[in-house]
Length: 308
Image 1: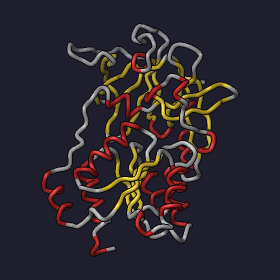
Image 2: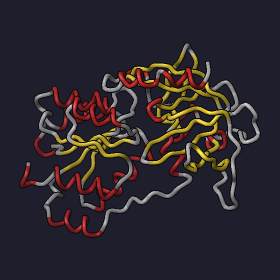
Image 3: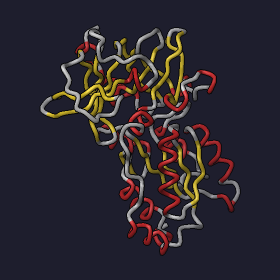
């Protein structure tokens, strides 16, 4: 299948969002192991272009090239995942992606096809598989193991991201009497959870952690039964195994005991379709990762005791 034919149907795949289903672009990195990335993050798949590599670039960077008038970096995903480099592989492709308000390419050995996965079929990988934190979900496609790459983890290894809240926002948090309120952080990425925990510590807020939507829903149902452990606000990723952020939000809104919770969907996914789905499932806000001050301002607004 050509790259054009492969991505011509991407628009139709967006209809899966909000129904705990996701479309995955499958590819390999040098052996038979299948890897995947959410189609919503993919702009285009290209044959490996001529790239420029400057001295001092991170070893995982294969170089950069001009993509529709914009210079974007290309990460050798083979190297990042522990495989031999793909820079000299003539048949390699570049998967151009856009998320977390940035555009980048990922060098892969070859692309396969697009498949649909249900949230229930995706599960956290066992440590015995050896992927470490580089993979945040696995499933089986036609009997073969497919691993979903934690792109946030890959990018965090290359580029440092600002995770501190501005001093004036920290001061605002101190004067809002928020320490008695608790936040639930729901994210399957170790990197993302670490950043959020660091942010909320600066605001003197306690966090309850869940690694996917299903765990979050179970914890919320249990905790809301006891007054001392009530959660005020849920910050949830969208892409997660078992139960995604859209489905989690819908479940919260459909459960009388949880309906009053504030919900912020916090994701590296971008695009107009997110805005519509946020409204459809009943989330209070959507914030693209990772913007510490914007997230802090949103938390201050939604958790203000005078407005809740």
